[in-house]
Image (cartoon, rainbow, N blue to C red; front, side, top):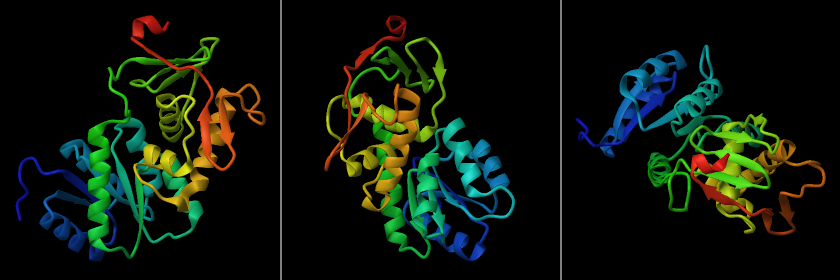
Length: 248
């Protein structure tokens, strides 16, 4: 079946033909333009040639694994990624989410559920990372800190650049878009990862701990990113959005 020219482009990366081929056929019947790759190396070539809208990615593959490829995709191309894997341990799911994956589906899965998750992620990407209207290239200023969302560059009050992982950037962006508001773990996870899943509460807690070590004077007694008992987290700071020229 030939997909329509405006169909979402999906790259399916899995080394098992018995899963990859029938799944690609099924997704094609659901209106997606699907290409296949049997390895991370093949996936890199397909991405350069076809520029997919979303990548379905197996973790356990010969050679470069899916985690390594995911890190490359979210950091260099900002491509949305959904993991397909037989791994069921919570720690493995957390690692994938912290790398910046948008969702995580455990094999065996119901194909209709996967289609629903794909469409959810694509809708979130189409909306953009911010729930606020305004120019995407405007900077955030808070307590002497500055975040450039286009370059994903965080600068401390002394002008020193502080590196952020993809997951840390998404979390900080969510907090900056809702200053002083209490955001519970489910809502944060939905905003940061594009889904609501209480199974991954610990992923949010781990990300908050890492971000605190970078922006707090004393991460054990946080003043900026506060824990709200029974509620979640809150950014206790005034946030301003300004054009880049005014942010310096």
